[in-house]
Each structure stands twice: as C-alpha cells, then as structure tokens.
Length: 412
Image (tube, rainbow, N blue to C red; front, side, top):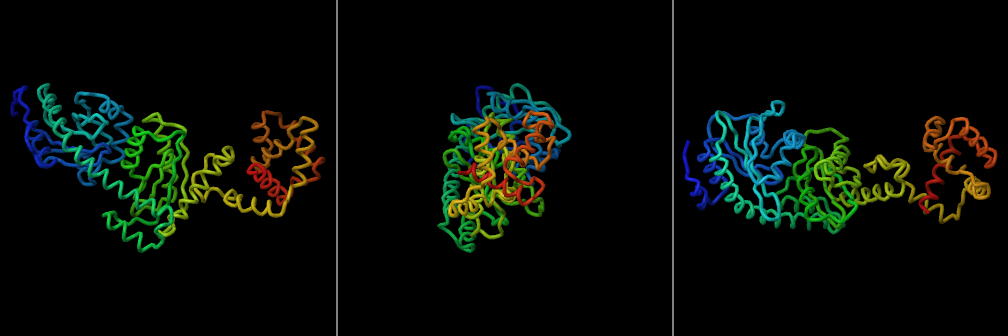
C-alpha cells in the first residue's frame, strides 16, 4: 500500500477530468473505485485491474446503478445513512444483488448531495488512514461535480422549454418535434404518454431534488422530459425498449407515490396519465387527458380515487360531455328529485342509499357494510325507494341512468 502523510493531501492537484481523479483515488487506495452523481448515474470508474463484483460490472455496462441495487440499499438503510454522514460508511456484502464489501462516501456541497464515491474492498479492508484519504478525495470530487451540475442544469432548462412548447401545442408537427428532440441528443422514444403528479403544497427545492432522484433512477419507464410547475410534476414517459408491459406506466405512478412517502416523507400526492400515443403531435392530447383524470379524481375520490389512467376512467371520461347536454336540455331526473324531496321532509337518506347501492354494483352485502347497516335494513330502504320513485332496480337501463345522473348532479 502507498502511504501518504495525513497532513498531505494527495488529491490537491489539477486532474482535468473525473476519469483522472478516479484513477488517482484507485491508485492511492489500491482498490476499484466508481464515482456516481446524486442520482446514481455513473460518471467515472477506475481502470483498476483484478476482481470485481456483479453490481459494479452491471453499473459500468448500463452507465448507472441497477434499480434493484438502489432499492436494496434504501431498504437496508444504507443510502439514508450515507446522506446523513460526514464520514465514509462501510457496507457489508449483499449477495442477492451481487454487491461485495464496500466503503462509500457522499460528495456534499452546501446545497446537498452531489454524488457518491464507491470503493470496492476485495482482498482487504480500508484502514482509518485510508478513510481519511477518501474524505479528502470527496472534497476534490466536489469541485468537479459542481461543474458537472452547472452544465446539467443548463441542458435541463433547454429540455424543459422544449417540453412546454410540446405540451401547450406550440409545436404540432410530429417531424418537427422529433427533429428538435434529436437536436438535444435525446433518442426518440415512442409510444409515449404524459404523466402528472399533483402535490398538496408547492414543490420546494428540497422536494425537487427528491423528484429528480426518483425520475432519474427509475428503470420502469424511459423518461424523456420532466418539468416542475408550482405543485405539479409533469413527465413524458415511454415503455422500456422491448417491453410490452401495458401496465408499466400505472406501476410507475404507484411506485413513485409510495417511494416518495417511504424514502422522503412526502405524502398526499395524486398521480394520473393520459393515453399512450405513437406520434409526438398527440402529446398535447395525452397531457389534457391526464389533467382530466386528476380533475375527476378530485371530484369523485371514492369512485375513482384509485384510478390513474385515462383508459381506466370508463364512463367518467364522458361526464363533462353529458353534463353539457343535460344543461343545454334543462333536464332534471324526476326520480332523483322525488327522493331528494322525500329525504328533506322525512330526514331520511334514501338518495345516499341508492348511490352507494349502485356504486357497489347492486351488491346488498357490500352496500350494507359501507352504510354500516344490517342487510335487512338496506332491503327495506330499497323497497321504499322503488315505491316512492316508481323505478325498477332490476332494469339495467334505469340503473345506469340513475347512476350517471347522480354523478352529474355532483359535478353541478
């Protein structure tokens, strides 16, 4: 091993690139080394010869840490520990993800985490002296990563401006949009759909960094663009190449909401996506479909609260059209009016009972459970509803009409 006096920093020189720095760290520590950004994308790796492990090899091949490795490190509490520690952290092997013994340290600036240095311990453990040297290496890497961050921010601003032009219909031609995407060095990725996440409060810089982490590290979808506007995150996502998983987008939405809560304690997020289209000119349409899903989820949280995609909305996709027709015609459902008036005079809940009964697909047991009443009580109420409103609850046309008019009344 090379010995360096503790009062002498072997990394206080000009390296010119992260590749030169990572080779220097490897030479000083006599171990394989990788440097990643804050979102686990590989920035540089040492040319150290000898043994390695599967996690390192897979990271080098893909140019980013595999998502299963990231998830495992979060579950084991390793990444939170790295983010909160001023010192290098020793990590024991995790066989099921091919991770060997390691020491890692975060590269930190005053504004947060810039990246990580990972040192693979193959034949020996790093000494206390080498831990100190690794801390010095992280200080040198900080200056390099700050420059990387500035370049990345400028590029992202250009991406976001182009994305807004597409979303707002300023660019309508598929060929024109495709050409501009390629000018940014982004590979065209279709089919694509727009995904929107709505946060309870305005997105702070800290939450924005968590969002960037989640969007960048995901390997469920290919994210071409993302932009943040006050309390919303808007993305353009495509299935991974060769994937035929039609539920991938919905799975991503569910996972994003879950992980933002578990990892970063950011809760009360609503998610939705528009349809997936094969041309960029329809991205604007997908955007408006995603907005429609969010609006309907907010209006009908019990009925479609667990719905994420425009396709899953079913009949709720047409409520706005039906409402417009209802208002133009001045139509009012006489049955619902009778029940409403009866409830007002007699202090009953027949209208609510009918709605919950229809919501539960006419299942007496499920409806009674939701109403917290005995099934016999529900059966009696249904009998009264039939008598008062003169309806046939066995007639599917009547039931569908009642169901839709109840929902339309809620919109009004």
